[in-house]
Length: 324
Image 1 (cartoon, rainbow, N blue to C red):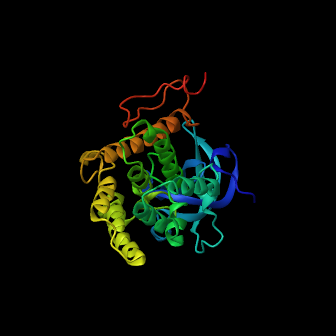
Image 2 (image 1 turned 120 degrees about the horizontal axis):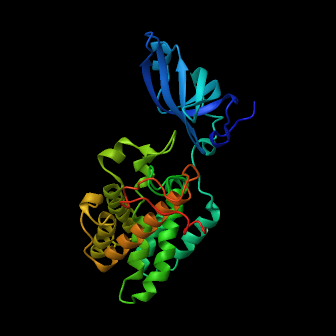
Image 3 (image 1 turned 60 degrees about the vertical axis):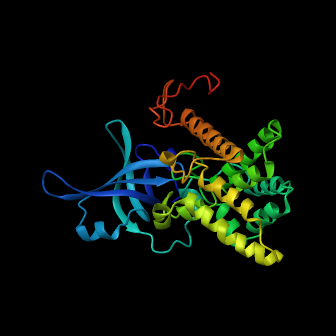
């Protein structure tokens, strides 16, 4: 049976395919029969699901989140589609699971984005800063994670390739903005923007969805990124046969530690250099613009206004940005 994407499901459809079980709760009916209430997802959306007469043994075998093979049908309940499962089994082997079918992915060309990012980094003039940035570009294991990682769990660029897309976007902004302020150290800004989210390659997991790893929750990408730079500096210094300038290293680490701006938003320290302030503003600009565009282009929202968006403190008016 051909796979049907969640955003293409209609009442009466019969499904026999894999989904991601993102949530599950064991409920009890008025007649004391147990049932599973949950949510299934793929790259196109989410759908509520139910499975009646579920034993505790079956329920415990179904992990959340996890890939499950589900047989069932689509019904309408209170005006919304829901998936009624006749059977639901854990997927034992993930060899044949294509993550792109279940997780959102960048719509842009990854190869072209990486080439442009490399091109911008190559314009760094300071040989020490360039050596440090190139050490990451030449690290295949790191770059394999970097080009596939999301940039967030849900707020902005929360899709496979989102970290690369976001990082390239902020670098492109810096290319435009830095010439307006000739007293700014452009090399530091470019390096800071390249490094600012490198810790997200470990902070976020993208096996079943976009969630935080244990190290992501306990340490976070801000501190991780600065720690990694400190370690990488020692490796690069050994390779080139001399120590990298300590002051340069200090201000680069500060760019990472301060790029969220304020402690309440996750910054370890507030920005205290011109370059740190620019890195914070550029990062915030790209994140906020992507969030508002995602909001107004959400296909599940009807009408002229989005739902309330806490990050903006209001609903967002859609027609102007949608060209209506």
